[in-house]
Length: 106
Length: 464
Image 1 (cartoon, rainbow over the protein chains, first blue to last red):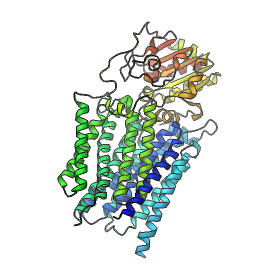
Image 2: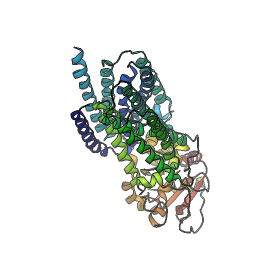
Image 3: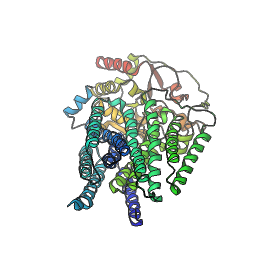
Image 4: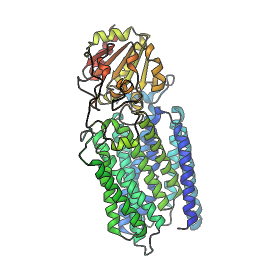
């Protein structure tokens, strides 16, 4: 790996850190639980690395990659679905909807 | 053609995914746009996954497809059938899964690089080291947090002599091996010892942290899981992993700081303080006695109040009483009482726990008030109802500089005209601290299971 790509990775990291700070400070405490499950789902992007590992030649890599794909995918699908389920419940006084009632019955 | 796909199209799909992630998180700033934002982020994830499936390094697809399908099914099942009250446990578990994926990719990458015949560069070894260190300690730390939240083991801090010394030396050893490996990556045994040490360190780190400090632990694990993913991005030179991992890492970091501020403690203090275990009770010699109140009398207070504030705590979640609280609130509003809910940032077991719980019970979020918003209103409030909360309303935090929770901002229910505390029994709270609030002249105790007590109150209000 050449120095140039290392530096450009550090750029991306630093800028993402600043951006993350700006964006996430604006999330109200009301939504902190959905925020946590959403960021968790997003960081399951490591599934991308896991897919390549699971498709490689060596058996060791493939088995490890398979477990990694599975557990990352649990977070991708589970994380986004449960975040949506939570967000569906947050209602202002005016807009009460049916979805909320269904949820409340559980 | 092949080259255009791998060198242009796949990276572009990652760029698109990164943009969608950032837009998605930005929309989380408001409950009305939040769902749309999450759909954007999910679309970004889909784009990245589909793009990756065309990668030229992939030789066989069987295990990939099985893993994708299996993971999706488990994830979907968990999110459909997991009750809302189990949200902290689910989140702890998902931190473990995310970190496991990152550390396994790290181990596989190390293995692959080792057998590729070329020496592992120092840069790559550094990234891989961070990846498996953060990843492994998050796996076991989160699993332990899960066990504590699921009450598979007791939630109180577990401490022993020399704990901090052991933890620090263990960490130092792992760090030493890490540095050694950067210079000599071929030491396979050392690499696996480092992985093992990180697993062990995760357990030892969470062991002494009590249930009431869980919001901090959850936020930290959130952060570490993200940083592990970011380190993966460095190791395999993939920018979308760096971006998404860093966003998660910083989100968790910000939440940890907010939680610590809400308890007036430093992160070091939460991690190494073993709060609440050797309880020295420095509570101001509590004077007076606790005064009990019956449901009928409580209802008289509530039904004729102008403003009632509910203060929920973890007890509300354990009693599954969120729906009954909403019923009581509605019954009171029906009589013209102004009803509000006061949410302390560290009430419950994870950031925002109480908000989700009340949202589930259909309480509109416009009725939920943060600490700073509600405290000025307290002197003008007729009745505050404390449900399963303890430390967050403990006036000792404000009045007694010697208290272990001194300086922690509290919801000042003691300034209300009357406080009704719903409590299971006469014992102390999770932190084991005496709460002078219970002995104040304007405080009345309503003993019993929160759900049963509240149900009774609802019936009485409807007949009052």
